[in-house]
Length: 417
Image (cartoon, rainbow, N blue to C red):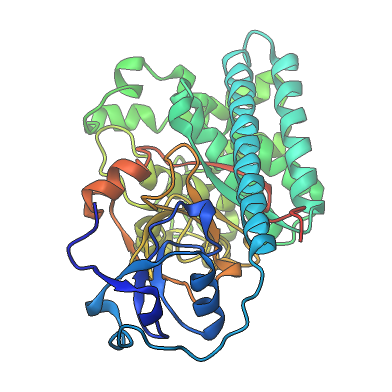
C-alpha cells in the first residue's frame, strides 16, 4: 500500500530535487532503489522513459515543489536504458552466485574443522592433514590473491556451533596476516594454531563448557586450564612446537593480566598476540555462558576504548583498520534512510563494503545487494542494534544471532565490466 507521506503527481511535474517512489518492479527500472531524490537531468530522462504516467513523491523529503500540471519540460535526450538494466540484473545475479559460493565453501570448511578437532586424539595424523589442507588452500589464496574480502555468512545453517569459533578465528586471523604483510609460512602457522587454539576444551567437563549462565570462580579456574591442556594435546598429536606455544599463550595479554603464566609484551609469541585479539573479538560478538553479545561495531569500539592495554596495540589497530568501521554482520542505516546488513568488506577498501538492503520491491530470497564503491551518492550513516530496526526491516533482513565469517575473493572480483 502507498505510504501516507507520498502524494501522486503527473509525470510532467517531475523535476530535480523531488523525492519520488517508482511503482515498478526492481528489474523494471534502471535505478538502485525504487525511492530516491532526483539529482540530475539524466535521471529525469530515465524516469520519463519508464512509461509511468503518474508517480508518488514525498513532500517532506523533497527540496522543492513539483512543476505545475501540464508543464512542458525542456527537451532532454532520452538515453537508452536497456543496457543499463541488463548490466544491473547481471551484476546482481553474479553477486548472488558469489555469495552462494562463499556459503557453500564455509559449510565445507565447518565440516573439515569439526572432523579435525573431533579426531585429533584418536587419529592425529589424519586430523592434522585435514586441517593443514584447509589452511594451506585459504592461506595461499589470501596471500597471493590481490583482492580478498571478509564475508558474513549464515552460520545458523550449520549444526556445528561449537566449531564456528575456531573457524571464525582462523578466517579473521588469516585476513589479518595479509594486512600485516606476513609471509605465507607464517600465515599457515597462524591458521593451524587458530583451528586448534581451543582444543584443550575437549578436556573440560560439559557441565562447565556448555553452561548457559556465568561461571563461578571454581569453574572459571578449571576453564582456564584449557590452554595448558591444549598445549599438551598439541605436543602429543605431533603439531609443531611453535603451534603448541601459540595454543598455550593465546590468553596471555600484553599487560600481564592473562593466563596461564601472566606473560607480558614481547614475552608472548607474536602469533599468540594476534590470535588473542581475534579470539577476544569473536567472543565479544558470540559470547558463551550467558554473556551479552555486542555488535561487530560495538566489539571493535570496546576493544580499542577499554581493552587496548591488553593487546599488542599495533596489531589491534591493523585489525580494526582491516575490518573497517562497519565490519561484516553490522546492521546499518544508509544515507538515504534504507536499512541493511554489511555482508562483505575488502580490507583494502574498508569504508565501502557490500550491503544487503531492505527493499520491499525485492523478494527476501533474492535481496538487493549494493557495492558502495559503485554508489558515490550513498554512505553508511550509523550502525544499529537489530532491535532498533523497523519491524518490517527486522523481518526482511533477519539478522543472525551468531556472526560467522569466511574469507574469499572480493565479491566484485571477476565481475563483468
